[in-house]
Length: 78
Image 1 (tube, rainbow, N blue to C red):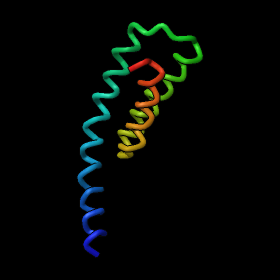
Image 2 (cartoon, rainbow, N blue to C red):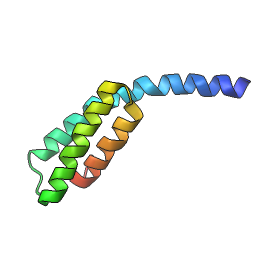
Image 3 (cartoon, rainbow, N blue to C red):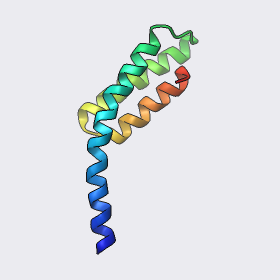
């Protein structure tokens, strides 16, 4: 029971932390897009992941948002 309570508490604390990371990740992707030299396919994928990350953030799915934005950042070399 003690482990379950600890896990629940950590889950509750992790979500707000991820919520604050999303806007910073979106800003990093936006800034990198200004000077990125990617193929058309990669550029389209980054833009799709960026939009997906923002939609997930607005929907409250912050962990999924961070994951999508991390993929976009990886394509941009961040």
